[in-house]
Length: 448
Picture (tube, rainbow, N blue to C red):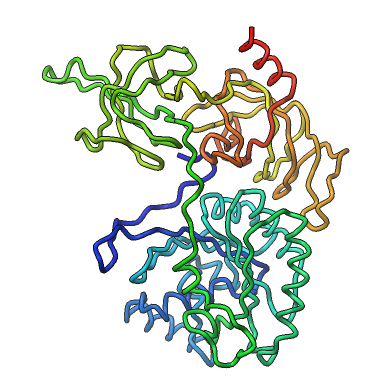
């Protein structure tokens, strides 16, 4: 399981020709009142994903509020406080499918107060949609969400310039937003950015191409989401954090010992050599099982049980890896941390750190710098991270972790920090660098 977040999954499905249907996870973000919930409501409505009683309920609510039209945002703003304030507070997951693909949507909050919720929703996304009000242009929250999208390694970014109906569907407001956002995205190093002019309220360029904007030559949003390539580059380095040791108590299986968990990367097959960390024992895989049935191979992100040829002392938090490509074992590293607690992060504080299935104690050595998500400047003399702030932090742990860089492996490159007393999650981290002297020491030891 990724240390940042794991949204709900959806049942398997097939296309009309019997092939497995792809799944696209995407998040929506943007400033308050840019139309995120309305856009999702429009997608659900125009793809016939709403039951008649749901539609009737939001029609009654819209009428009671004096709205001239059905407020589709009510489909996703489920909390009472959200409906009363007209804003999104929590992350809302919604599901729908077309004949071409399944979708899981994470509708994330736009207010700066709920940046931590946006990080949670986007951490497992294949694609992020950032909405920008055509009248307001690119604002601080637009840049903040684009920055977080890049930091979280989301491979595709779609900028939906919304409320085009309020600027007479003109090309000039769209081009102004596109040019402004492009300059900022270039500084972030975002490779795949797509710009779409839409009206979520009227449905223009959401499911079908709009005739009101003949100057736009690209696809509508839904056709683009159906065809965008979402398969990440295959990480062949084998990573299997052990979540549970299975030891049946009945006499018929008294010799059975299985290790259950989720494959974070690579492929595991019976007969493969594996290295057990942290002990360093080398053994072979006896079987790979899914729901008690042997299968030929398991790859990310499958959850399976692995049995081994040798009876070894292995417990939760250990990791099975490829002997020729192990992760870095370290007790000191730097990471980008999004702070999620009212009490600030400062040097000298101690927390519980959960990385994959392993939990250790961690000490904050130093706040290296704090990011200014508006100007992209680094505040080198920052000493703390406050609620919703993001910065680079140096950490030391009481036991080794087996890590990869977040850019190459989200599962083994991410972690969460928890309060020692309450066990509340207070921070989410992306490992982006290992302290140089430790890496040099490891390399020197290996060559010796």
